Length: 251
Image 1 (cartoon, rainbow, N blue to C red):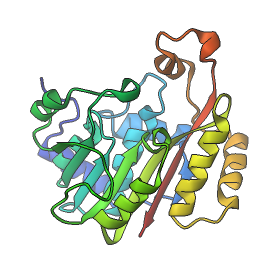
Image 2: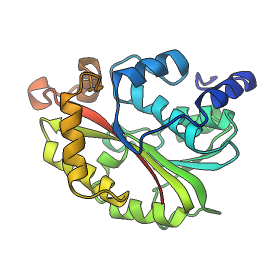
Image 3: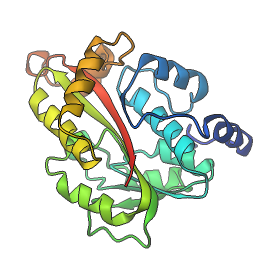
């Protein structure tokens, strides 16, 4: 199988030149404008199913290309199928993808298949924390729709502190329910993520107010909700208002 995330050397050079130096706000939420930009500019990893990953994957790739020069080492934890890592590897980065690949929470299990499909990515099976074996510190650590699934974030934060070079970039997309089941849990996760990256307590509240009032905010759509719901009866998994929190910082 050939991954749809592969890009030619000519395409990689075009992408790197197009996104290098683009201004990426340190704290934001996904927008429809950015999604449309991704459909036009990064169709290789921009989905059309209404899931938040449709906008999160390309935002992550664009942010990395804008902020980190090619040749650097990137680490994605909770990587699952490493489409973003494959594209970035083709664009000149050294990419490590870490995931337990144990299927928890309907997560991925296809470790061997991904290793065959994405030979340009160093795919490792395991948990990302301070004890994860890593040969050297990396330039960027990122995650896509992962932090909200981890109920104790401190080991992850400790891992970022240990494995990231001084001045390196911590960059994340986080699903945040702002209305519906588990909204207070999600808000707490958002506050923890912001605090780790140096933001004071009101930062999340201000961002949520702005996102709710913004016509451009990209919310999880009905088709994306259907993917999340799976075979669970709707009354047990009703629709929720969900946004993507997007954050990066040099630590």
